[in-house]
Image (cartoon, rainbow, N blue to C red; front, side, top):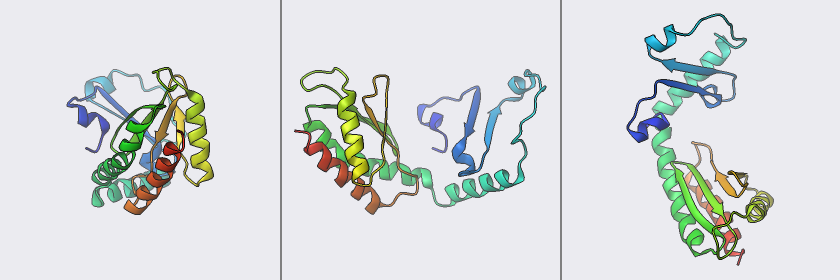
Length: 174
């Protein structure tokens, strides 16, 4: 799927996007049907509206994504990464769940023997990963969810290397 909503069998009334569409160049977009768009008053301007450099960057980004099937690649790499991580996550007493969609994965950390969130475990894993050269994020309502979101152009070798780092850290948790 090109858009995330397409994986859920629905069509939104309005679609907004930004950041990645310009591949680092400032750009955002809004897409909706004519009835909705015509109902909004057009009384403001955008400092980035119609920027030629950003528009060319977005066009090049979209062309690259389509020509190289980055969505299909992201799905395959996400499945590969999840396949490496799942056994270690399932064997851990402090990891409750591995979840995600495509190349965007999350690991929920909990206190051993319960489902109580444990942000300390998430922080330790994140810092150990950083020390090993792997950047992951942390979020969730309680700060106990590790966020893993490699670039869509990640290679199999990079996925395997990242998975090795994370599995080693997870297995070292005890």
